[in-house]
Image (cartoon, rainbow, N blue to C red; front, side, top):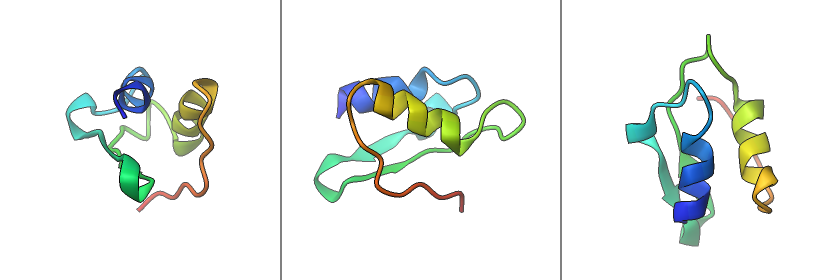
Length: 59
């Protein structure tokens, strides 16, 4: 869980305080500045550490 949170927090534009990973539920909640990054960059960061992303959406 901390590894995934760290990867997400490393993405420029992510609100580091907002990152919450619920490993047992296979979910993560993240707030980010859309002028600095996008969901695809966050997905890439998670995939780069060896995890799959089943579904990503902006809500």
